Length: 514
Ligand SMILES: *Cc1c(COP(=O)(O)O)cnc(C)c1O
Image (tube, rainbow, N blue to C red):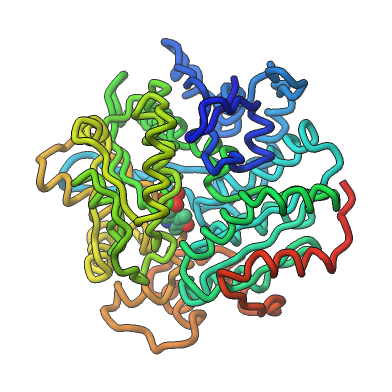
């Protein structure tokens, strides 16, 4: 299987090149030239495997033996090793991504819990695996070079990437987070990060500023050459990297298999997934799963008050000329949803010129508009919806009192948007809400939602203790331990100084041994 770019059809690279490079030279995103389809009976076979077995099987479809023109193919055994290393020990749930049924009024409802990894957010599902995929890819394509991973984070990617890449030989990782845009726990998780190859800095700006700064570094040809001369190459651990997306396809398939095993779906019966969305990476993996033939009906794209995607799926117009809000669900405070570009590429049948045009327009004017026919086609699968902070808190309260379920602020957005969808359409088909974070990552907000009182400002840990005492739901150990960890990183940089900052930091470090 080969990969091309969303903006340039001449690009043809292997999976290893796509993963090692992160983003295509002209700024497009890598996409597989074709999507493998499940054969009849294949899902029944997968249903009998555990999570690692399902992961090996699906990854191998995208990381194929034939390396194309170069000798960079993947042996099945290597793919299996990567999957085992990623999922064998780092997750506290033996199912890795368990599916929990919830009592519900308007049709069967389950929650797919993706927060049982080391950093308690769904990013772990991809970022526990990516370091193995990336170092293997680099060994195939970038012999001997140190990989410098640059990450912009809206809160959870940063920590998950740091944890995944810490002390991985041949790599160095630098994470940029929006100074005022992350929760107290998210920030503490990052600035206390251990490891000899890690660096964390705040950016005075929002996530979009940090992401744009990094995209500029990646597409700077002169800088790339300078780096190569010093034996280094940049790569990305953001969801623009194909290596982040492919592991996410696995849990959609796995959830479907679990629902079949639990007899919650009839053979062939389709299911809706509701996904709390920011950069559009998680939900796009669901779309790939659907394209592979997984019986998914609707993908419900849930936004917070930054409802740019809800508006896009309602009108066909993507318009980032609007105020940016910080919300209780900071990991979704995003106005440039990078992975939407991949969806548009798929939906236009790979029309690179069109995609490149829209993205140029977006960069220049902040807006672009797709034709009504294309929107109608997208709406056959994608339903957008949004809710504000008050609705988010009410939903947390409602699910806790109604069925004893403790949802985090992001999951609550999806629960709410799914309910709105069911109420307006009367559609009672089985649905899965994708739960993306532990409620303890946002303990103060969750506690406030349940008790109705805003906890006294400041100490996030008293909220953790109070939430545990009130609900009896245990706080994950890594979050509890944060209180006693030393802060290692205090730097701040402005978004237009990121390149200088990166170079300055690299100048002071030795190449790490590969
Ligand atoms: C990253 C994140 C999201 C958004 O996921 P995307 O793939 O960016 O759409 C939602 N919830 C949480 C908790 C996250 O960390």
